[in-house]
Image 1 (cartoon, rainbow, N blue to C red):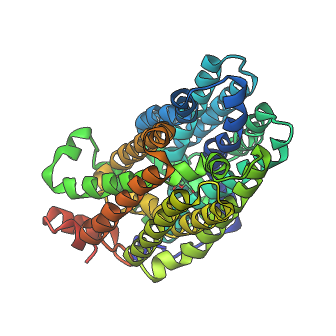
Image 2 (cartoon, protein in one colour; image 1 turned 180 degrees about the vertical axis):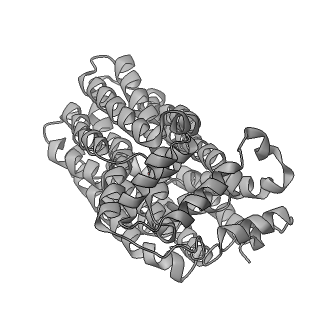
Image 3 (cartoon, helix red, strand yellow; image 1 turned 30 degrees about the vertical axis):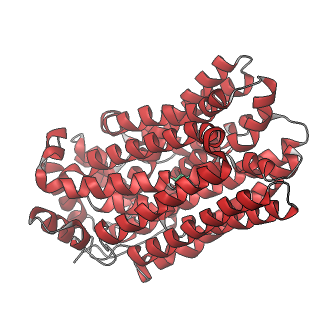
Length: 460
Ligand code: BGC
């Protein structure tokens, strides 16, 4: 939880928890629809006889859609409203998911996945925004991180569904399960209130006040309304992003987005069964079952890390996590180097991946999303954050589509060494450039930015 965000007394009632939980289903969809491909691809590859490049494209299509969706999400959320956008997004999820599940040509499948991706991109920005606007200020930080927990739960759900259908090679059924959370999100959102901040933005003060009273469970909302009104008074525009004093914030956001993706997380999330097969798990269904362990560890270490982010701070966790990721990538690379045909290879690869995912889940996983929500000055927080989210999807896309081609060119050993090298640069970046924002007010960060303080010291 971020301290000093607002003088409002922290009040957390059941209603606000319910509202945030329903909106967080969007995070589950994000995780499910990105994770489900890991098992499905083993059978799609076979059914459509795909080359490594086409294989990468099928995995990457959802991410390409997400880049587009997230780039426009800020504008959509302002124009139609956060709640309406999430309702429309849930419908798009259903259409794209059914389209992918029923696809009879690879082109159709790719189009279906792009449509799902557009929905994920929009939801990955809009859901945390909606949650942060209905949550009491003192809980915003914790709720931003909860979104990451929802993503990891969605990934785990996808792995379990993949495991259940692996024996029948039923990739269509794997995709189709994505309809369930989308329908729950759709009907859930219909009962939720519009964001009070958005209502004020649109000039409907009466409804905004009524909604806020209901969400807070008390009448004393004048301070909060005034605070929102002040924040709305400053008009944001893309041009503000060009101001020189804002650049450190952009640098931190882009750098974290880049290293979160380019240290290879999604080569594991999307390709773990593929890698396990390469490492010697002979059946597809065995490789998919083992992948569930990765999913469980991802959830467990996210839960473990959430309270530590405010206790230990962002930087120590990032340094610790990245160091562990570096070591496990070296171990994975070594396993493939010495272990070809060796029984040990598969257990070493499993162990390395489990360590890797645990280290990611306690560092770059949640902290990247948290810091990009913290470093931008209020005037351009929405714009800046949506730009960073879009950039992160772009890096994600690039890694996903190049992974199998890299393996073809450099082998598993060389490919994992590349991600290890990225982790070294990532460590340098964190140590040299990322500020400690634990316990700092967002206003303080903005004052420091305006004063030209170096990025590393923005939180002091
Ligand atoms: C990343 C995703 C990744 C997930 C794994 C998220 O923070 O943005 O790309 O798949 O973590 O848990």
